[in-house]
Length: 540
Image (cartoon, rainbow, N blue to C red):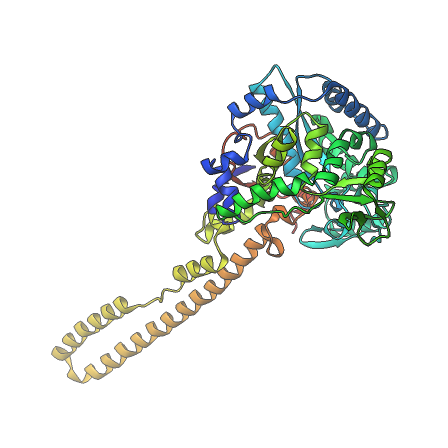
């Protein structure tokens, strides 16, 4: 395997705000706690702390969550180290997508693990633990119920409601049968499907199933999988929930920063609400709104007075759930976290939150871009290069690429020089004939024209061949682009990473994880990894 690196600016897929962030533009600095640089982390390490009592609560919650999940030595060590004041976390998060969803789910976790390695090298006296924060409280089931394998949409037929993490695993066995049919020609899938089936048998709900998958792939690297939907952790966050209910600090502070972002010409990623909390029951998670001196739960009959909702918070803090605006505060309250690893959209909305963190006197982490990865096979790259393109051209607009192909192959073949030489030759023959027998001249001229007509016919057939080759090249162009942009979306945002493992073999994950040259203090690149097809797919 080998990798080509492409500048983010040349891909045309990133927002101006994200590009300016990774280019460390000065006007963005006030919206951060420092760019991802060595000096920024040296400073933040000295400023970040988590109350020892809260560290003990966090450890206890994690040990409880891992009771029924095979725990590696590396994970046990990570949990133990969280009890030390010199241990910090690096966090990434994602929804509980079907079978982990798009490939960048894996790339976020890989980035988190690799960045912890880099921090350990730079600050050996400290410990850095990678954490995958499961969005187990998210209730947008439609966003997580499908995934793509080999560009085919696989959809989960579930009627579950409420928090995604608590969804029953009904019908998932049927989906596995469908997936196995898709990968029937692939030996790489055998062990993975065995694990999926085993994890389904051992799990009671979606959060536990996803935790087992993630632990299977990354447990040996010390990654901690954290389900934040826990009453003990919500108790730590209780004062912030109360502040949101009574003072609505978030909307005031986030609006201040959002206005600054708009004034700089950027599009804000999120819009805060007056109350950025949900209230949840067994099969619902609905917004809390304040109206006519009552706290009402939308789409339900629940409503509370101020005293009643504060009593409910004190008695049942687990029923209160942060939205996308308040979730970062929750994360930073219960973890000794110094960095958040995320994609362009996540970094963009985190940039709206700094003033909210400052107001609440909670540590704001340094935002570190994840890795961006596309995977193609060697044959596809070779075909691309034969068309006259380079890896960077994958991100050029298809219409521009087609025009370039037309320019390359649209030239008309003309045999004018050859015809002139034929005419010249026959002129010499005519000169000879004039000295021998002038009656032969008309015959010679007729042969001359016949030869020219033959060349014209050859010229026409050659140009027809050029046109056919041109159409074939355009078809080949679109076929290749489908590998990078399946169904019109970037591969990493569409194709499930397990499908890539089936196609290229499990060695792909090891290769990505062990690329030691990755420097997260440097500007991120779009990585184009060129891999060999799996042995079982060579007949394709």
